Image (cartoon, rainbow, N blue to C red):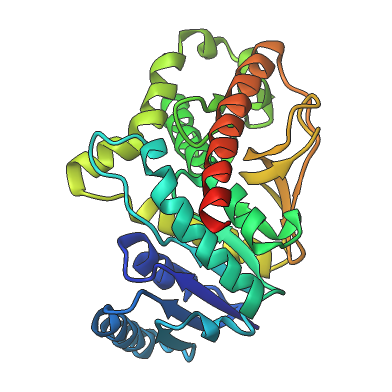
Length: 318
């Protein structure tokens, strides 16, 4: 049984993630952490969740705090803390302010919960995963981000709808940045075990429009309802369950790579990774030549932003 801590628990994603994680049988305690001044809201969220537990017969413990010293004995730290993206704002505009927050949190994880695994949700998630890795001092296998997992699921849903099949029949991935330079792997996409390019209907698919829909999905939801909540919350719970259940599933998350994808790496970015109780382990893959070009460009973009942010953070901590 495991203790899961959610840092940034008063935000929309953190609150809903707590609810979805509470349904995982491997979890015996959820700890909600928020900043000082939000004690009333934290207490209210915990009380409301306890009522939901009573209604469904769940005996899980749920606690709250503003003190990161309570991180002790945590198995997984889910970090949703930071400033949310506003309508019209690029994920990368958030980078510096959120990097300061993530660096501080990561130091606290190193101090109070050095055996934990960090799941980074704060955007821009690929860059924040690198910040968490650097400032926590944890092994790369124990720090990963939501990455392109939800993007891959969005594409999967679109493909299933267009081919009029159940989503379980579709296997696809998006790698690279969780953002504009994401790379859909059509070369690794199958429907019912058949490579999608071998299906005559593939030539008629609005591929570019589909990818644009995935890229702008978050922005569209933010514009229409203020925040993305349900999709990220369920995706977070899936990853937590995969870790705690020692499932060895291969999901596309932001992880540190060196040479697993055509010898491209030295960055945290979305790639297929085997996930279990020990952490995340990127899977070496070979992809289509054009996809390699796109992935390399995505890596160079994220690597450059990450290096710039790290330099600023290092100057501030000297």
